[in-house]
Amino acid sequence: PPHTGVFQELTTSDCRFFNSTDRVKFVERFIYNQEQYANFDSDVGHFVGYTSFGEKFARYWNNLPDSMEVTRAQVDGLCRHNYEVFRPFLMER
Ligand SMILES: *[C@@H]1O[C@H](CO)[C@@H](O)[C@H](O)[C@H]1NC(C)=O
Picture 1: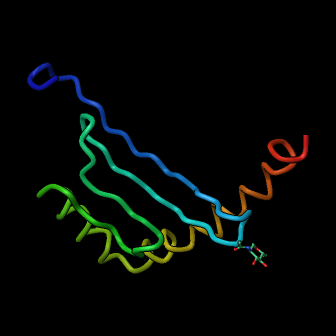
Picture 2: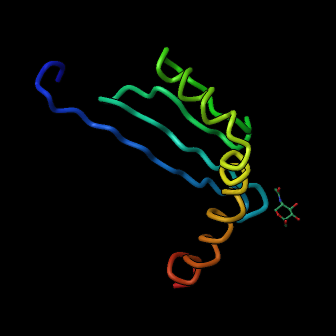
């Protein structure tokens, strides 16, 4: 709650698979005290801010080309990679 000095900062990363790895979507969410202030959606290709802080956050990260390249590569480097790593445990039992 506000004014308690206790807060929660939460970041989630989702990989969504459609028809195995035929179509893959990577979504990263940035949440402060249960309010999502920014996200990255691989279908959109850049960070989007939902609050005034989120807009600054998005502008900052969108202007770091090296970092954006890594983030945009997550559909392959993280999602498709992990799909192959976890497939034997999740799909072939
Ligand atoms: C599913 O993926 C396969 C292999 O990439 C593709 O040939 C097929 O058309 C896809 N099916 C659908 C429903 O998109």
